[in-house]
Image 1 (cartoon, rainbow over the protein chains, first blue to last red):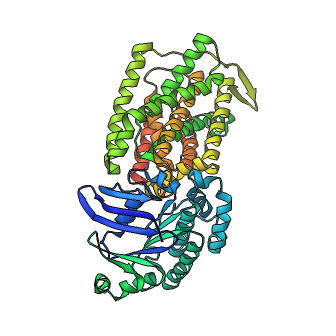
Image 2 (cartoon, each protein chain N blue to C red):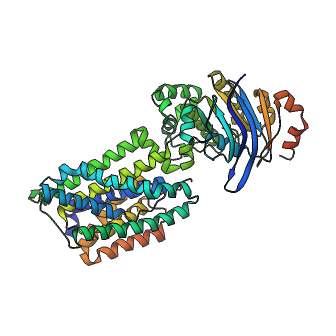
Image 3 (cartoon, rainbow over the protein chains, first blue to last red):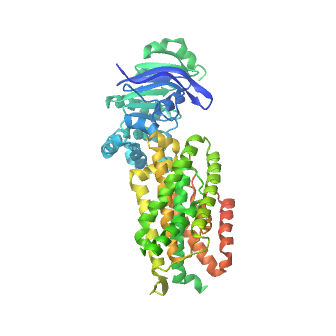
Length: 237
Length: 295
């Protein structure tokens, strides 16, 4: 499988604090790629840099063969690189439907907004039931669905899922994991960061383990399951 | 106490309230989307008033006809200020507190410059013109044509902006940026476009308010400051960045001012305004309808 999104020697951080040190990673087209790592390993920094919320200090990001590391976040969204951020970041005082509609603000998705909206409601009937409710009043799991749905409204080609099950009840986390393969069937490529190693490696074809802002080890799901680095990375968690 | 039930007072309160709501709207947009404290906001009202004055005096064109031109003029001032001064501030400043402090100082300077440039160009003496000042009597209320027009146009503009914010994707983008800058970037909103748009819309509406005011009141280069204060009272009452709350609070302040002055005396007007300002900050700093907002 060819790579749809690629990071090469990517360096990033906040101000003078460097968090990512030369990360190399590629997201396979039409597949699920996992990023594993303990808290503070740099997963969120990596995702925010790929999405353009953080400027890359050095290195390159390529999407569909062209460099995107200098593009502002809204242009990356329009091209099809869409982040579903850690902590959901829904608009609390806007209704569920407004949250979804604003998801298709980019020029490519805007004209197809109504059609995408019904697809998203089919995928998440719960959101349909609550369409006029303020997003801030939803439960954590529902907000995660909303954040996912909002991401889909942008008509992404690559979806960057940053810890989609963080803080969710186990049944809700299970539901989220059941939805992810459906997204691939819709034609998306997925990069997912997760703490739940077993479940993630079951659905991902390839994975990277981040440690202190570097890729410590990478490989297919079964390969990673057997590496000591994986168990080490998550010991004590 | 009969005075409280006078329809005349009710009409005055509505006119003033609608103007306050209109003026505060722009301040709220600029603060809400960018956390910039525009202490020069009332001076845009002044520029709108002068534009209307000269338009009418030189060409005889009614300010009501000229409103779109005046709005474009003050919106243009907004776009210029954004491009020259504030775009860099917004990109280079990390913390909200620093941004608020810097913007307060910058806008203070802008306010002083605008006032003095206008005083230099057109002298500091107050000016006025007569337009639509025929008095109509309707249901026991004596009202001049210009005040009726002010009320109607203010309500129309407010309704237009609310509908724009509620039901278009551009308006939704403004609301989204007010609620969370980070999330706005995540969903792919072109943040700098929304920012320049907020400047244009906010300043344009302030210009319209100024033109409306100039039809019924004396204007001077220093007329803006009381409106700035009133607008700050309104947006704090309504909750910073809360557009609907600000409109309600604007009308409320108009009523409080008109009725309180009617019950006491006009000399208490500014004491009242500052009193409410301080009172709200002390008792309910998040505003009457304020909500806690995320970054």
